[in-house]
Length: 200
Image (cartoon, rainbow, N blue to C red):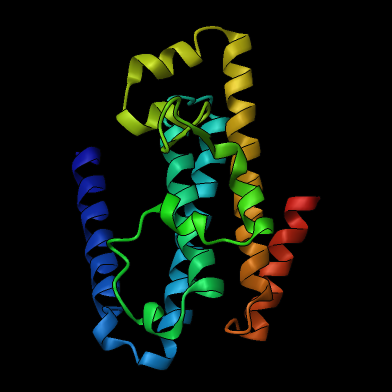
C-alpha cells in the first residue's frame, strides 16, 4: 500500500517536472535569455549530481560513483562552454552533437588543467580515453567496478578519488559561472555562498 502511494507520488512529481522542462523548450525562451537559462539548468543538474555523489559516499554506495562523476563532468564542461566559450549563435542551438572531449579541447589552459586528470592517451593511437577513476563508467562494466572496490583499502582510495574529482570540477564550474557577465548579481552572491561552504 505504502509502496503504491509512494510510486504515485513520484509519478506526479515527474509529471510536474516534465511540464517545467517542456515550458523551457528552446523555442519558447526569448533568444536573449537562452544562454543564461541554459547555464542555469546546467548548474541545477550539476548541483544535484554533486549532492548525489556525496550522498553515495555517506551511504557507502561506491558502485554508482563513476557514472555520477562522469555525468557531473559532462554537465560542467557543457556549462562552462555555454558561459565562456560558445558564441551567440552556438548558445541558441541544440548541443546534442557536442561531445565532452571535443568541447574540452577548446578550453584555455587554465580550464583544461582542471580536467587534465580525466584523460590519457590510448597507446599507439591519437585517441584519448577516460582514465583510472572514470574508465569503468564508459562501458558499464560492473565487474571492473567491483575490482576497484574489492577491499576496504581499495574502496577508500576509489571513494577519495571520486570525491576529490567531483569537488574539483563542481567548484571550477561554480567559479566560471560566478565570473560570467550573463549571471545576475543576486545569483552571483548565491554562488559565492556555496563556494564559501565548500571551503569551510
